[in-house]
Length: 286
Image (cartoon, rainbow, N blue to C red; front, side, top):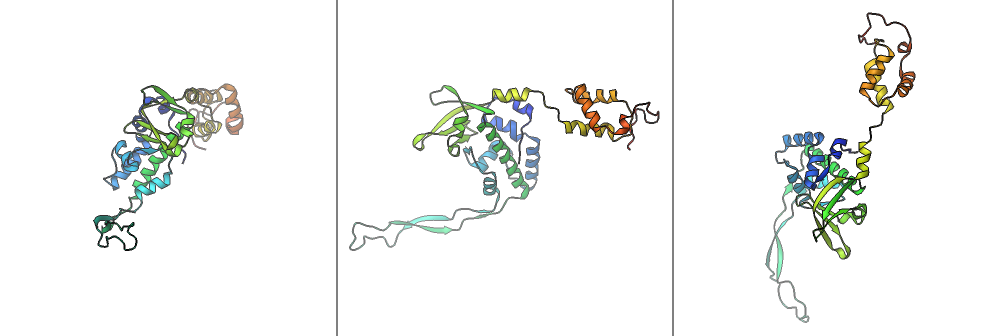
């Protein structure tokens, strides 16, 4: 599943916290909100806020790398709670004869109840969780690729920017705390360093790319011409078609329009001569 964040949302990303960015890019997306509404219809316990959802799915820190299918299955598939045990004295507790240096356990664990079976969540809940996890993974890909940058404060209080190498060095051990707005990076000797006050900004190169005018897609213009003009009996002349098409695609030049006209315009539209009055300015399907 390919996730692309809207250009206007990415361009507006400027100093949000982890949770604010999650709300801005993921939680408020129309597709996500529709999926959450469907989930709430069949399961009233489905989280109603982004903070509650992250706590339910990850129970604290969010791993920077995760398997969408595996996490979704863990949360929504049927599961079994751990069995309940109690600590009781061991009736066999004694010092072994001939082996005074070894003792049996003084207390043992005894099972007192089987773990509860938790039924699987309804399909709309699974779909909502899967969609949100896919969006979150896409956000992490943007960060890992350097398209979105995160600045933090180190333990001394100094502000610094985490670069691409920080995210690609042992990514499986990186954790993000969306509620506390912290980033936990692995150090040597299995130690973890906590960076606080995380802020997300769009990388300069990404911003330059997004500020470029969108490229004109030939197939998109051709489809629009067919929809608005060529499927009808000719009702206007070529200059009128160009004016209307340029109004829809402002970057379209006369040279590019001529190429499109020569390639896609039907023969009846290319014929010169006056348009019959009964068709002039009136769209009649062929």
